[in-house]
Amino acid sequence: MKRTQANAIALFNIFLMALFFISCESKPAHEEGEKTEHEGERRSEIVQLSKQELDEFGIELANAGPGKLKIHVSLPGEIIIPPDNLAHIHPRFPGMVKKVFKHIGDFVKKGETLAIIEGNESLTEYKVNSLIDGIIVEKHLSLGEVVDNSEHGFVVADLSNVWAMLTLYQKDLPSVEIGQKVTISAGLELPKSEGIIAYISPIIDETTRTAEARIVLKNTLGHWKPGLFVTGEIITSDVEVALLVPKTALEIFENQNVVFVQSKEGFVPRAVQIGRRNEVSVEVIGGLNPGETYVSKGGFTLKAELQKSELGEGHGH
Image 1 (cartoon, rainbow, N blue to C red):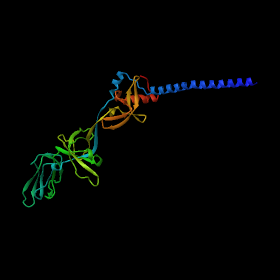
Image 2: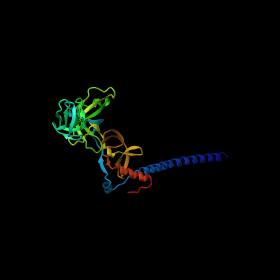
Image 3: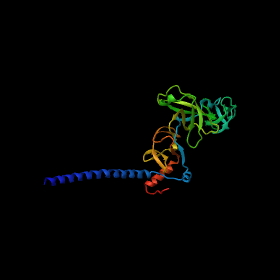
Image 4: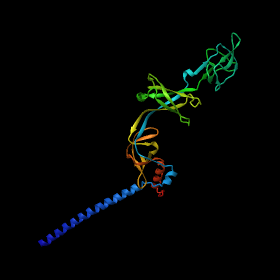
């Protein structure tokens, strides 16, 4: 009886050990299955394109590496007429307007006759002449009108050069200086112009808490019209960074900033962490390694291919 019980206990122990080893052997198989599944998920995020397709889609490649990042500030502003470029032309004596030769928008030369007025007291006619070369921007007299010499009849503006007056915020004051180069733009497909900061107001406006920076712009072609809102881009420093990519390399995929990196199997979206940036370049501080080949332009095409694949509408390449 005792021997039978001992045999039963021994068999039970052997059974437990067998179960233990079976469970240990099945665990790696389970992990291997998970590994295979994850690899399958990674493969689903690979886009394969031939050299010909890269060329057709205009996709450009580059090697990740260091570069200089131009740090700049962007300031709003407005085009104005320099005060010394304006001439307010008054009649010399009160009288009646007998003739008007020029109108708003007309270009006039210095000394050119704009109107003729008959004096009230002398009853003799005299000429009203332009004081500068420029364009008539205001006209305040008409034929037959009786005018007073206390008010100007014309305003002539020399628009061959204008001022871009930029709003300078307190936070930008330490980095903006007289003599710095500024790129002025207005959108609207107008060409950009470059100028130099010629003046920064020495006091802060008590209402707006801002200062003003003045840039003199040549306006030979008349693109810069007074009253036009503009933006001034001022490069304040050049910074050497370890990894610099063009802004066109960044795409938003699954709510992350990604760069498409070339691997042996194709192109893979790689989540990256970005640092400082300007209008053309971005500093990468994580997710991309020096020397890796990435898509510098045209990544939106690869993103579209991935999105098609996720919807089940894509096709392999």
